[in-house]
Length: 252
Length: 252
DNA sequence: TAAATTTTATTTGTCTGACATTTAAAGGTC
DNA sequence: GACCTTTAAATGTCAGACAAATAAAATTTA
Image (cartoon, rainbow over all chains, first blue to last red; front, side):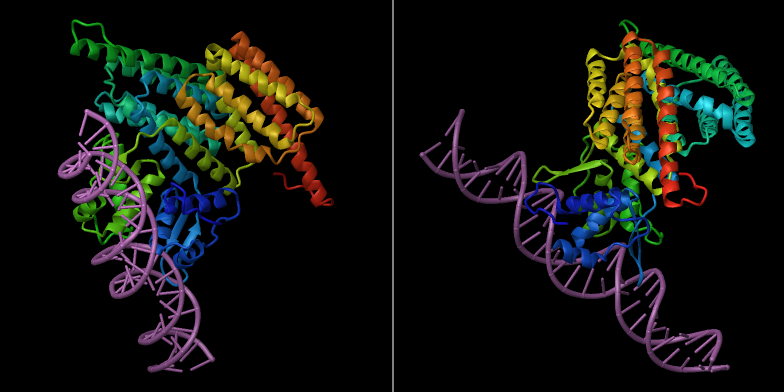
């Protein structure tokens, strides 16, 4: 492991990359202790500050954890699904907001992925997950629910559906797609009529999941996608018309 | 923005979290310049080293980029799909390897997600993407191809299929699922017979995509999943039997 | 001896100050 | 006006110091 002082990249970035590659490549295994900062500084022939900056880069990606004290140090961290979820959600949220991804694009991706889970969920969901779905549907039917709370309940419903597939890899992937949509969904005002329609579709989906009918659940999700997109389209069109009453709306 | 010196968390972690929240929350916008390290140190009442460690944490997540020189500094970075891809692949790969996710679980997730893309890809794929798929199928049919090269071509084929959906959010999500499988796939030895079968299925899928037949493409992926899983199962069983000839295999 | 306490050594976390390097803008020269 | 030099500002790196946490070793005490 040698670093290149002539490289354009920072020394701390080079060191972080080398250690990261060693982790991904399996040379460093979970719970293994890295040499102390002082030893690493010696090995790489850099100062301790530089080593520390490299380690902080790795810590930010949950690749290592550090512990103070006599037997402390930096240890290779087992990346848990929990940690990966939150990273995934942050990244997905930023991707959507920073790249001006349209509502339609995000929505299409979300429902396409969710349909991938539906047949598995219909087959494997626990009674508890089904109960969660039912409970969220009931909550969504309450008339005095705020739009924000309605969206949050929507996310909870869909998470239960996804988790029903009993595949942590799917749950991880879907976490980003479902949760990152929430800021976009929060831009929508849900009328009583549209809520009624959504609740009805949610109920149909729950029925299909309960009956173990993956096809019906998939169809329900497709209907829900159509409903959501047309709802969003009408709302965005109305807002555009309000802002520029005389011009053709530019769309979303 | 105040930091809590009594918190158990490191100062640099606290500062990084605060800035990150400001980015995710939209208070800091793309290409905006953060105060200089010295100014941040003043504001947060910490040393410049601590600020730097916080900034390196953010840089590791591609949330900021830094530039040296008179007009330099730390700028909020537009998170590109490219950057997100590679982060996603790293995270997915580590999740699978560190949590001992079974081949079946990963495989199921991958094909479920890919089937979500198939109908869209059948509808929208460009001629170029179809040509890529055909080219990879041809490559896979070459008899003297190494197992590793066969797997790499497999990934390229499926990426073209996924990108055919023309939805960057889907491509981003699938990048993790498809590429992270590669180390697992590389554990498999592909016999001439099994390669023949896979190439045939790939060819059928390409046909379906060319014909715009999403249903057939989906079915082809299902067949491919069955084939891949049974192939893996037989290979893992054979290896287990070789190691412990007298005991029941523990499976993968 | 056994338990409780103190000491010690190690390691990360933070601070200070310095210098190197990069970069763009300001100033000067032809 | 074009070209060169200087300057200032910012990040990158280094060195050394101390603080704080922590576990093991050493010591004291019952």
